[in-house]
Image 1 (tube, rainbow, N blue to C red):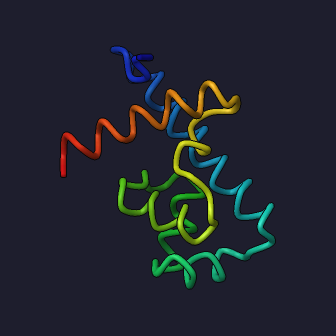
Image 2 (image 1 turned 30 degrees about the vertical axis):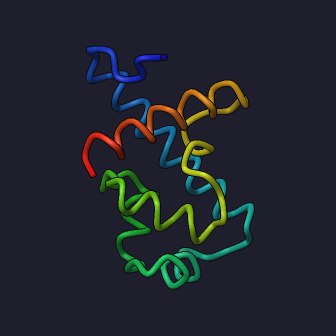
Length: 100
C-alpha cells in the first residue's frame, strides 16, 4: 500500500491543496454554487467557502458530506488515475476502520 503521508509536512500541505482543488473542480463540474453544495451537503456555506479557499482543512465528516452531495467517491478527490483512486480508497477505508 502507498504511504501517502510519509514524513513531510510539505507533502501533507500539497495533498490538502490537491484535495481542495478537486472539491472545487467537482462542484463546478456538477454546476453547483457553493450555496447549492452547502445545502445538499448539510454544511454551512461559510465552511464550503473556507474549505475551497484553503482557510480550513476539511475533516473526514466534511469530506464524506461533500462527496455524498456531489455523488462521487471520496477516493476520487485524492487521485487522478483509477490505480491511484483504488490505493486512496484503501487508505480511506483503513483510516475509517481505525478510528470508527
